[in-house]
Image 1 (cartoon, one colour):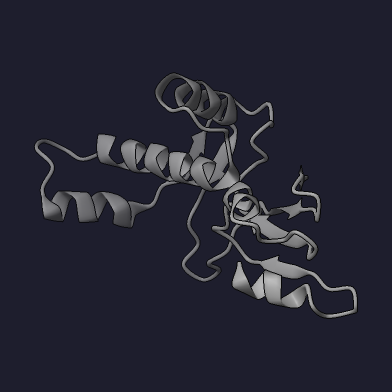
Image 2 (image 1 turned 180 degrees about the vertical axis):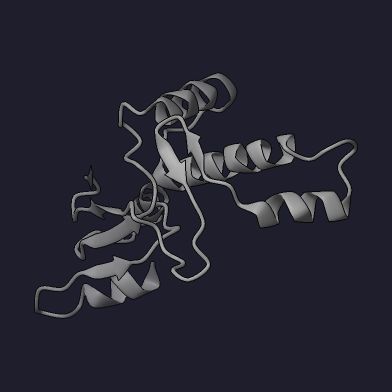
Length: 141
C-alpha cells in the first residue's frame, strides 16, 4: 500500500502488477491504488462466474461469513475442496504416509468445472485472468 501511495507523487502514468494472492478489495480499503491502478492476476475464475464451483463457493460464503466474494478466498475454497477430494481417497484411517501417498498420486480432478491437474515438468496453470483496482476503488474484471 505504501508503495502505491508513493507512486502517486510521480507525474507519469504507471500501473502496479501483482502476480497473485492479492485481495484488491482489502487493498482499496487500506487506501492503496487511489491514483495508481493495480492489476492483479488470479489463477481462479472470476467470483461472478457461472461455474458450479463458484456458485458453491458463493453459497457457502453467504451462509457462513459476512464478507463479499473475492478471488483470494475463492482460491482458498478451491484448494480446500481439492484437499478434501484427495483425502477422500486415503484408505483406512488417515496417516502421514497414507496422506502423502494420496497427494503424490495427483490424479486429475474436476471441481465443479475448474480442472486441477499436476504436471511435474510444467508447474503452471492454464487458467489465468486479471482484475484491476481502478483509481476510484472499483474492481474491474
